[in-house]
Image (cartoon, rainbow, N blue to C red; front, top):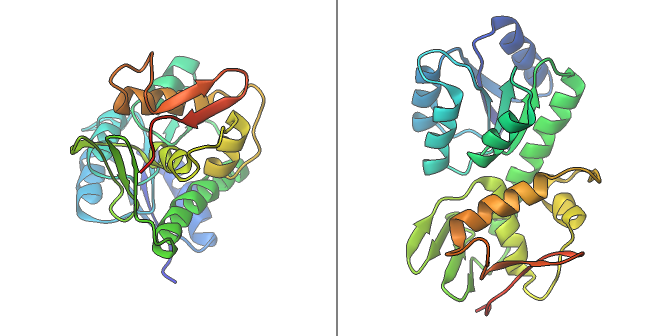
Length: 235
C-alpha cells in the first residue's frame, strides 16, 4: 500500500519543520512549500491525500488557494491559522475547509486530527471500490461515487470531501434520520461534543450548494429535535 502524501503550505519554517518531522515519523510522505504560488502549482500538478494550509501565505493567500482547490478537487484541507476567532473559523469552513486548527496548537491533537482526515478520505476511496452501487440518485440529484461528481439536472455541483461524504451517507440510507452525533461519528470518526456546531455548518454549506431554496430544502431536510434525513424520491 502506498504512503499517504501530504502537502504542507506554511511560511513559518519552525512550524513547517515541526509538522514535517512529526508526519514523517508517522510514515507519511510530505512536501513543504512556503508560499501560495508554489502551493497552487503543487496542487495543480500532483495528487495529495491531505493539504495542510496556512491562511497568511505570501504571494497568494491561503483562502484563495482553498477556493481554487475546492473548484477542482475533493482533497481534504486542514487550515492552520493564527486567527482563531469564531468568525475566522466559520469563514474557513464556509469556503470549504474540512478542519480548522488555531495556532499555537498541541502537536498530539494536530496529529490525531490529521489521522482522522486521512482515515475518512482513504475510507471513502476504499468504500467506493467495494460497493457495486456507484451512482446514487434522488430526484434530479445524482452522486457518482467513482468520480466524486455530483450533479443536479446535469449541472455539476462542487462539494468538499466532507460535504460529499454527508450527502453520500444520506443517499445510502434514504429512510433513516441521522442525529448530529451520528453524522459526526460516521464522517469524522471522532467523539461528538455537545456544543460542536461542525455538522450544522457543513449541512448549511451543503444546502447552499444543492438546494434551490436552502431555507426550504428539497433534499436535506431537518427533523426537528432529532437530526437530518434525505427527502425526495431515491432512485
